[in-house]
Length: 198
Image (cartoon, rainbow, N blue to C red):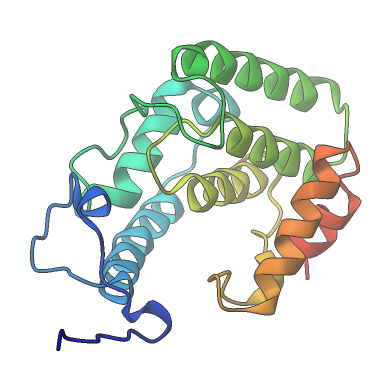
């Protein structure tokens, strides 16, 4: 009789693919990984609050990569590096740099010309960045922090609440968030803006 290991919620064991590039080899479950990543992310958030970033700096490829690195540099070896494989989400790996530059240029234009409200500009940045999916992991969290940095530093407005709760796969809030993302896919940004300010 074999061992019948049942993991509850985030106690699921990480598979070998998920461990690729992990800096702390003792991490073995999704819950441990989430906790360690969250500590790393909190240090990155503190870094964004210590400085004032100008719009041109925020909307640069250098900043996009640096922010991801700050968020995950103590967790993943590849933090801040674009993905080298294609996923079931995101654009082809060869177009990441081009599409990211297009997005950042578009966002600069929106800011300079006040094309949308400040909240909508930040949410459009977040939404398109997730569709590009530049990194192997952490794209949703990274794009939300990018929106927070932009709204706070470029527009002097409070950061988003992102539904005021956890977006883990087990919670209903995540379903609401995903539905709002699907609406944004149809060029209806209102639900995502409302969710972000909930």
